Length: 378
Image (cartoon, rainbow, N blue to C red; front, side, top):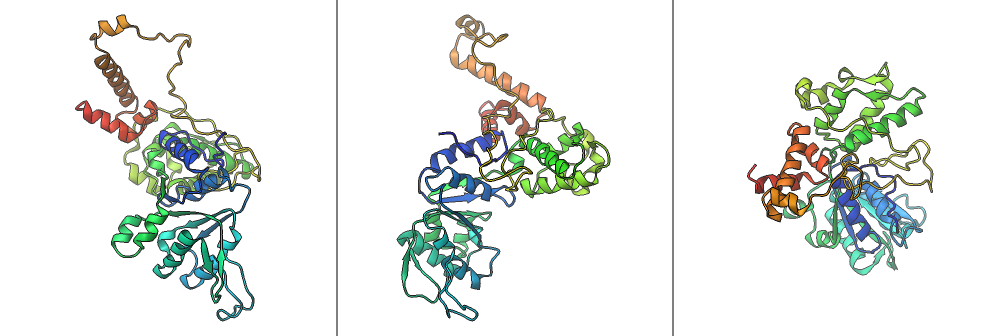
């Protein structure tokens, strides 16, 4: 069965690893805890989790635990009976009842009050709850998925989060990497957002100057995909010509990356934008022609999309032979190590020593590249 990525855009190896985990976890009913910085698109990932589950034909019910006052959150989650509190003029079902048979998404669960955490724990353990002001237990069949941008283990140690609830939620941990660890995805996403906003504002598409692409690759994106999306909307309004130049970028971005003339040239060409039919972006926003049932974007490849090694039999590619190996050391391990080091050095040279970009060119994680360099004493 083909994985429905719900339109998440990206071709980086780090995102490909997330999708591998998603494919394994989605068909189960296991509780999932999604972690990641603010703006990485955690809700979109959870929607993909629901869309690939056996509950996909049932409701997906999100609730932001940090956006609702704690005195009202219990009623939102579990509902209330008539007269339970002032202005409770009628009985009302909560989110758990609405999500029966489907998935409930508890976003920013790290913001939840300790007293309410006990009741969430009961739902996880017993699959039942009581409405506020009620005395009847209601059974519910829901898959619970939670997300947070906090370090819940640190919160447990500080006494702000229940340890038993943490372990109940953390059955399957799923981490969404920040944009700065997704290599060339920043250029792919910037192209998508820029085209989308230009189309919306009925202006010709903008292109990114090569120096701007270098800045985007070097910038740390503390606000992640949400920050990138907001910047692309701003540029689509304020840029006068057809090209985005360095002078068009915010002072905050330029101050962080330093002297632009010293930045390595981006080894990745201007990417083609994903299809306008993509349902949603990595920030969780809907595209211009999105509608329920639209075909999702193609799933990400294992690498950056422009550095794939030639396949066997491909014209112009010759497989090494035993004679080749013997001429270069006569030992399989040493020969493979030499080939690997040569490719690593070439990638580092093309990326001007920037390990994130070199790892993308090689189709591996940055941490894997660093470990290989350590083993080789580089």
